[in-house]
Length: 144
Image 1 (spheres, rainbow, N blue to C red):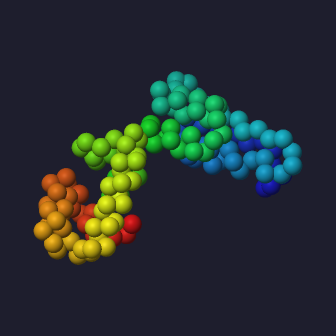
Image 2 (cartoon, rainbow, N blue to C red):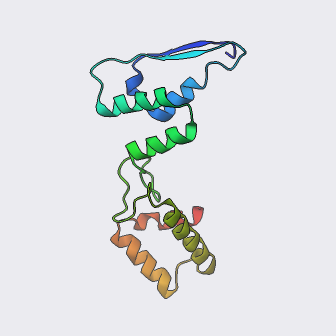
C-alpha cells in the first residue's frame, strides 16, 4: 500500500533488527510524511532495549547490519547456522574483516589450482577442517 503513512509494530522487542528495519521501510513510500511506531512491553531484555535504541538512532541500513552482526554473532561462514557465536577459534570476524577477505582470496586462488584438494596442501586443509569440526563444509567450499 504505497499511500500508507502510519505503521504500528506491536511487541517490537520480539523482532530482530533486520526485520524491524525492513518493516519500517514499508511505510512512507508515497508522497505523504510517515511514521513507524514501535510498541514494546516491559520488562525489556538488554538485547531488546539495544535493538530498539539502534532503530531510534539511525535509518542507515549498513550501520543496522553492523550492529546486528555484533549483537547476534556471525554464525557459520562455512555451514548452515545463520546466527550465534562464530565457530572460529581465533579469528574475530567483526574486527578482522580485511584479514578474512585476504584469507578468502587465498583460498579461492588455491582452489583454482587444486579444486579436488588432492595435493599435500589440500590433504592438510582437509585435516585442518576436520580438526575444526568443519569437515562437512568441504562439499560447500567450491560454492563461493
